[in-house]
Image (tube, rainbow, N blue to C red; front, side, top):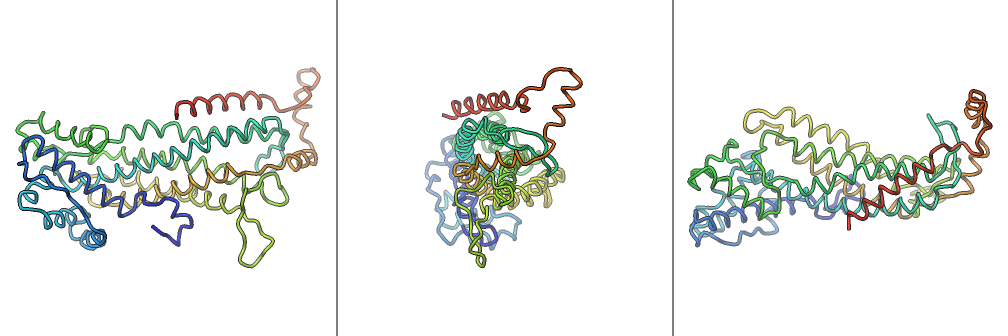
Length: 399
């Protein structure tokens, strides 16, 4: 895919693309057809390899507005290319939402795998930076102004803590992504009729989960917490990366000069510029992720009856956009933290030039009557240790 409106979109590759979505829907139909045959419900000659061609995505898209989703158009194409026995049994017992929701979840799984890889790289890079700069003196700022002495290690450890907060839940989310099989109104009525009993119908659903490597689940067609949990996880990642990129962009200003990107961007008219482009693009994703996540929550809240009239439909493009933007931001953040340059001497100079930094320390000493400690960084080093310990556990578990 290419997207001139979103520089870097190519870094997401085929993830959540039309081609990936179409392939996932076909995979669901293929798996279900095989399950019906294996269960003895459909005859052996109904089994066939379902395929699509390069132009099918456009054909499906052009006909999707007839029924309001792409599944009906896809099923029509697949049936038209199949032998009569295959066409007769294809999609039987499923409804469009089963195929679409399960296909979306398959696509999301690939997204979460990619983001997990990027997060692991970020944790390793940030842990190394925090260790190397744990004692590097630096100025801490609050509300844009000089505040107290601190260390660059403490700042980087906070970045790392945020990335870990985002990364740790991803593995559990990825392994619990559920299949969606409910039939027309979520009661498995058609599957029960085909299989002969409720237990056998549920067994068909579980078999589909196994074939497409998702978790077995009861129908969640009107309970959209599965989608909002995915959205929240993606937004949390973008939040963490946005914090890092904002600090780097601010720290790279010439008047600050403590941080810089390993390879900045240029200007079409100003050759002297070395723009923090990675930080800019990450911040863009962080700014837009929250509203996309909020749209998923609004759609969930608007769920009605046994299939929503617009709320369900609002999820698809929203989730795709959020997912691809998050993958791009993940790649940019990995590049940013792995190549980040830190100017220790500039950090020390900015700290030395700030006035009044020890006023709080003096007031504390006056209250206690004790001699002031040699530095005023409190538990910063202990905090770095705690975050590094957490990072080591994460890296070990990720292997």
